[in-house]
Image 1 (cartoon, rainbow, N blue to C red):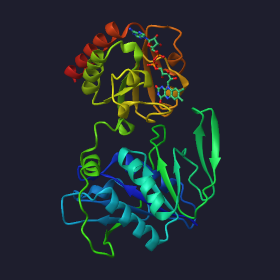
Image 2 (image 1 turned 90 degrees about the horizontal axis):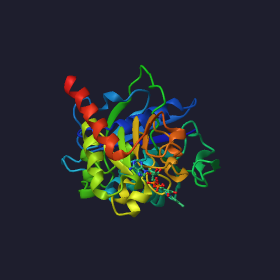
Image 3 (image 1 turned 60 degrees about the horizontal axis):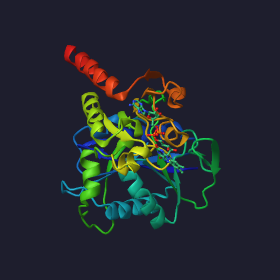
Image 4 (image 1 turned 60 degrees about the vertical axis):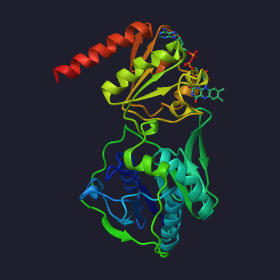
Length: 322
Ligand code: FAD
């Protein structure tokens, strides 16, 4: 019997969409006798937990201070909760904060760290994940009794429906110490980092075909109109046009936006590995035979310098008429 602890990240006083998604995915996979609990730290708005459906308990650590705890303190609180409740798995969303917390937690609890597991594999014995740029589905058997699982987003899943609601109880550390404040974790968890493209719902990404760093302003303009974020291929990052935090792919971030617009990106397998869960892919490329068109839902053959301004104008027109 498994006992899952889902780490819920707050966003502006609410439970973040990506955390709620992880919570519901675990709910769907509960077998008879399995248990689920949640953990959230920091001040929450009234009704913040209403987005959560299903059974279980949510432990809410309230410091009495508006500041959110540091990674070290979160790690200490979670370790205590895992030991106290006898949890067998801690599940975190693969966000910047999740990626930061998970290894620390695994080290503290001497637990196996499983990252990038695909949905449907969250059982006691095995975790499946794609390796070698998505060409091999590998099964990992955790060696320790506790697993720390980092889960990415998945848009194609229908919403989880349950009449039940988890109950919320206050979490108090046995040491009784108040959390300190970590500026990085606090920034990530309180406001949502604009740099954290792994959570973005819309991404406009550029590759070497953008030609120069300055042309990324076209992507910034389109992304800001759409309420999205800017991403990049490794070539664009290697050129120094964008920071590594925006790199998408095998050695960058895996993303799962509803809309991914690839501009001047050839579609190398290492890049495509990072966008496997994108719902709709639009590709703009001057080469009609670019591999990115094999995975694109909409293909625009053309020069980004001509297509992007027209696309941006068209989006602006649509938004103006709304
Ligand atoms: P290119 O392959 O050079 O493609 C540029 C594209 O732009 C071309 O298709 C061209 O037709 C088009 N183009 C040119 N001019 C224009 C224009 N004016 N208008 C429209 N289109 C135009 N890559 C990643 O992206 N992410 C990773 O995480 C990653 N990890 C890697 C890990 C390993 C171990 C290795 C070996 C490679 C990795 N790569 C990764 C690199 C990857 O193999 C490719 O080299 C890289 O993705 C290519 O980036 P690109 O598509 O921007 O550039």
